Image 1: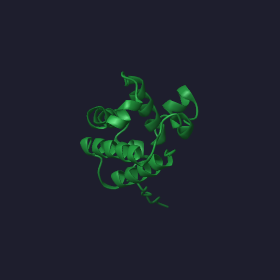
Image 2 (image 1 turned 30 degrees about the horizontal axis):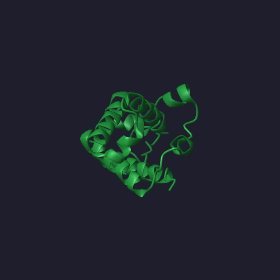
Image 3 (image 1 turned 90 degrees about the horizontal axis):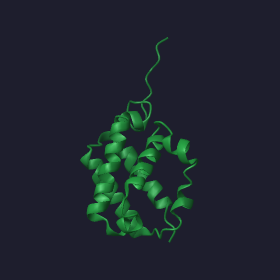
Length: 134
């Protein structure tokens, strides 16, 4: 009996992490995202320390596991508890929209397309709105 490959919502690979291209591509996405924050998202930038290298590393580690790759964040820091960790920041609709715009631009820059793009757009949208606390 021949097995029939199962298509995932994000594409042909077993995980979004693999569909994106693995570690280097996740890191590229994070770097482009934070570059967009630095260049054009003053509200988000004001929430970050002057040196955002730790923030960049944390998002890279989180997205790695969140997309189905190595669970780097969990291994180093435990459960993400995203809402709890973001609670000190006022996150309303303007902040959510600014975050999503930066992530969309980053995905454009690293050329995330097709089903993976649709999938990530939906997941990021859902997650960003879930973080609202005002």
